[in-house]
Length: 121
Image (cartoon, rainbow, N blue to C red; front, side, top):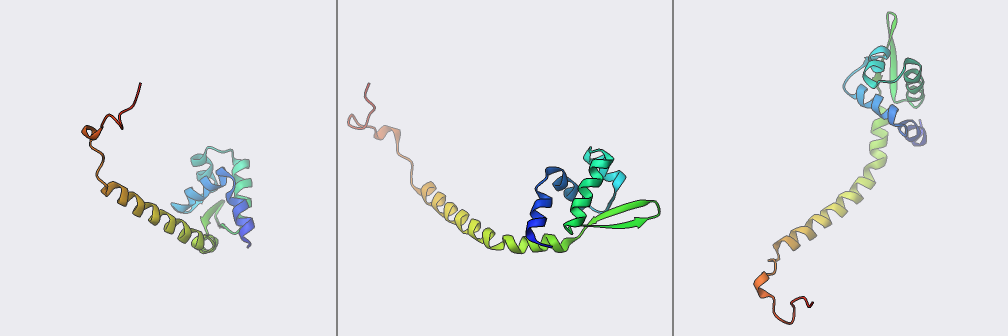
């Protein structure tokens, strides 16, 4: 499955909510409907998109369909995001060092205000 189809499937907030529910464990369609607050037809449509993108698997359990996350596409997204994560981590580390440097500088003493530096009316 392509990254584009995974991103497209995850672009919808309802589908992300369903993925979050399934992260906790497999759920039947009825459980997903109850926990997501979506209608059954809407939930089924979202599950169909997630299934087509390869993000979820379905198994038949008597009369119920039980959905579970497929971790492989999530791992693909994680691998794709790794260089960006390194970029952000480097930037955040630099910011942290800069903040540490500025927090070590003693703050100016308010009594150090002279006539030359005092605000003028």
